[in-house]
Image 1 (cartoon, rainbow, N blue to C red):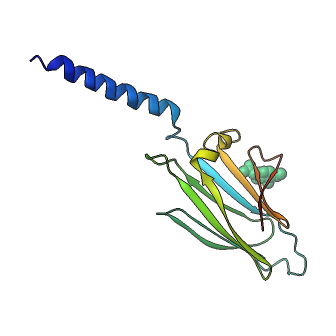
Image 2 (cartoon, rainbow, N blue to C red):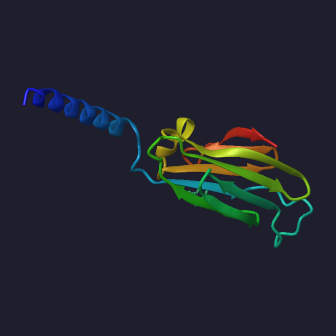
Length: 144
Ligand SMILES: *[C@@H]1O[C@H](CO)[C@@H](O)[C@H](O)[C@H]1NC(C)=O
């Protein structure tokens, strides 16, 4: 019986911490990640893919996709309970370049991808990969 107050206090503490972390972490948002092929065609024919993208996390594989110019590679993700969600991608510009980049990391993207339909937008270009949080202004982020 004497223990009751202690238990009640502990429960209160646990629920407050839980509430606090819910307030801070965007567990319920569904983030949309878009990667657009904006590479120039140069010598490649327009009806052939000039870019291959393959994105995955530790436990989810979005799959390798051949990309024509202008095509969008897209998927959705929520932030996991441990707040460690990370998607990385391999990009291969056919016969020219390849690289890896992070398409979604919680620390970097949780807030900045909330400004425009919960979307992170990437554009693959001749000099590298650009990021936009509003689909209007683009920030140079990764070099080939
Ligand atoms: C971004 O803008 C382009 C046109 O400028 C449009 O085609 C595309 O659908 C937009 N992307 C998103 C995710 O809204």
